Amino acid sequence: MKPNLLSGIQPTGRLHLGNYLGALDNFVKLQNSGRYNCFFFIADLHSLTEDFKPKDKSKQILSLLADYLAAGLNPKKSTIFIQSHIPANSELAWILNTITPFGELSRMTQFKDKSKDQASNINIGLFSYPILMTADVILYDANFVPVGEDQIQHLELSRTLTRKFNKRFGKTFIEPQPLLTEVPRLMSLNNPDKKMSKSQPQGCIFVDDSPATIKKKIMTATTDSGIEVKYDLKKKAGISNLITIYAALSEKNIKGVEKEFKGENYSVFKKSLANLINQHFSDHRKKKKQLLASPSKLKRITNQGDKKANKIANAKINKVKDQLGLL
Ligand code: AMP
Image 1 (spheres, rainbow, N blue to C red):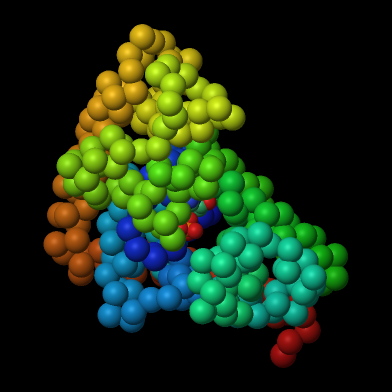
Image 2: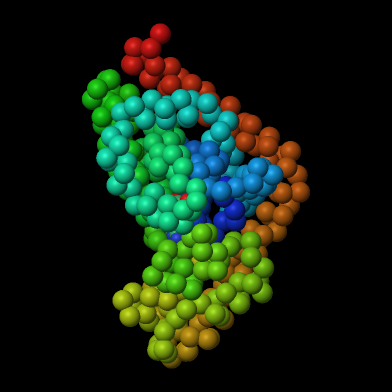
């Protein structure tokens, strides 16, 4: 039997290049490798931990779903579903709450960072986020979870909780392993010491940005006073980040990119990079637009995925309740 692989992205706005290179692009490659039984979901319950307007939420969900499909996730090959349509996820999260040590959860750096970013809305959901994430993953016996580096600490906690549950109540869950991409941490364009994040939109390239916007963002990306297109994370963090993007999208290695631009200045390199990004996402933009033109078709796709996911999730949550001695 193939190992299970599961991951999700929050529908919190527009998908940026960090989400794409750190997660979605890899989801598609892993799906197409044929080596895994894949599940990909829209993490809409997680996204409620950030400020939002209800009238925008359904649009954000459909937009992310369209991104999934435009990038190449295929409902014939993967189970694609919506987190809030699977009641067992939330039930299991509550149960896991009861075995999660407060001290351990308090160490999560993402909670600390997000608390600073959204100081007026430090809610308990933001704090207990890794518990819901654990439920999402272990409910489907996921062996592998492809994520960016920012999720490694959360997955470590998932592994701890899984071991704890199994030890106390009998072997029920599989310990999940993270799968990192070659770009586990893409940095912000205008602040290359910080990761690209939509809380700082000025430093993001969004996958559906227009070609003119992409060009402007790349041409004004922070670099240094040097002239050589050379990868050096310590001295040339900005240019190194741009080289990383170029390498990932052209499927070259870093050395190959340095060689291609040997003797060229930053401006020439940046123009080529802007063109490369535009070309890479031109099909994506068209497909996304077409998909968003028929929301009912998008909903049908997740309805099928929801059904499959619910079947697995319900069987597992019933087993969990038995293990706990619930009637
Ligand atoms: P989120 O928007 O928090 O749901 O993140 C979706 C996925 O994108 C997760 O797997 C993150 O680890 C990944 N991700 C987010 N930002 C970055 C980044 N700057 N570089 C690489 N991966 C990222």
